Amino acid sequence: MSIDQRSSSARRTTLGIFSNAVWQYWLLLVWCVWWGGLTFYALIVVPIGTEVLGAVEQGFLTQRVTQWHNGLSSVWAAILLVEAIRRPSRWIWAITILLSLVAVLLFLQHARLTAMMDFDSRTVPADFYARHEIYLCLIAMQWVVGLLVPLLFWNAGQFVLLRFQAHGSEKIFNSKNL
Image (cartoon, rainbow, N blue to C red; front, top):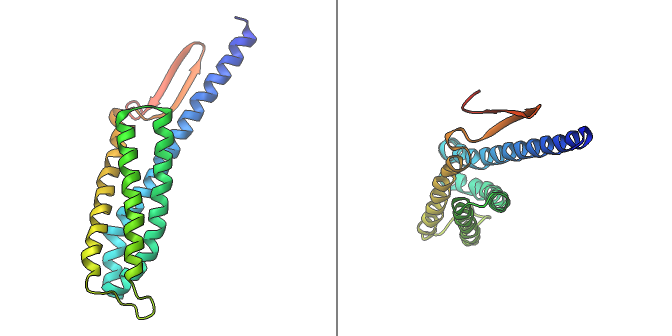
């Protein structure tokens, strides 16, 4: 192999490694926005909103916010699907399928709950809260399954942040040696 061929091969390898690192970083960022946003909203925004606005008004605010969260859940499921195709693993496939199923159920339940809400008078019927419990259970399931994602992708320091290759030797920087 000539020097030019080795140089070209090294550039392709470096580009591939860099692309993989960027993809993994993208996975981390999207997961943080999706899961972190859900966690922050549930732990901080809902209690404060309920205190300031009242439970029913907070519910009407949450109805609008959860449209965004449900959309982001679909984006996250699509990204997980790409990752499952890139790196076949029954665990990644299981998480992807489960989160996709929960996302579909959340969309359906959200539509049912929205149809029950009277936006003019800002009221909900008495049976709304029983159906809302189903939505909360689905959200809790989504949150718990989402909590498993870092264990799948970044367990035991396997998340590669940066990789250098020079003169046939390779130095890997990951969470174990940073």
